[in-house]
Every structure is written in C-alpha cells, then in structure tokens.
Image (cartoon, rainbow, N blue to C red; front, side, top):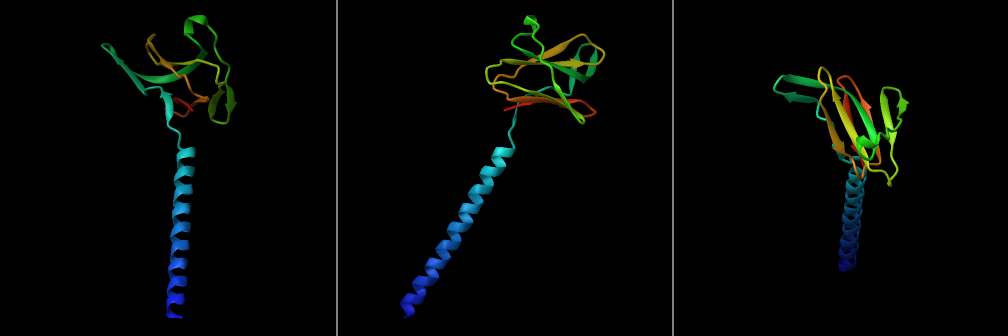
Amino acid sequence: MFLMMEINFMLSNNKKIATLFTSLLLSLLSINCHAQPPVVSCPATFSDEHGTYRLINVRLFDGPICNKVELVPEFKKEKVIWILDTRMDPSLVCLYNGTSHYIVLDAKGATSCEKKGVPVQAECMQ
C-alpha cells in the first residue's frame, strides 16, 4: 500500500512538471511570435559634415527607387501602414529635415512597414 501511494505521488509530480513545462514552452512560443524584430528601421538622425538631422518622413517603393513605383499607405489613427505582398522587393526611404540627403534601406522579406509618432519612427517587420 505504501508503494502504491508513493507511485501515485510520483505520477502526480510528473504530471505537474509536464504541465509546467508545457505552459512555459507555449509562453515562450507566444512571446516569440508577437515580438518580431524589424527587418529594417530608419535611424532617428542622420549626420554629415554640416550637421545632424532628424527623421521627418518615409516613403516606400516596390523595387529600386529609380523605378518610381511608390506604394500608397493606409492611414490608421496615428500610424501610416503599408501591407506588403511576399512578391514585393520593398525599399524604405528615410527622409531627414534640413537636408536633401536620404537613406534607402532594402526591406526584402518584410510583410508590413509603419511610420508613427513624434519624433517620427519608421520600421518594416516580417
């Protein structure tokens, strides 16, 4: 009888350990799915020999910017959002206040891009 109680106790502990392990694994997977790192993001500032300039706007193109295929965003509350097709090869163009210089970032693999906030922030995510 004592042996049977001990076996039941061990089985009960193993079930608890399995349940805790499964919960932990599912939590980690859930966190990983929601916290996708950006494919690319515009630097907040741009510096050259004349000064430092802050990000003021972004534009998104399908392919190289010389092809002039600019994508039209959706406007949602305080965000500008582009939903991308997997066949696209997006180029994110970061524009800075007080200079004609800009940065072009290859956002291949991104499924969406967004611009938000003051100061302006822009990124493309998978």
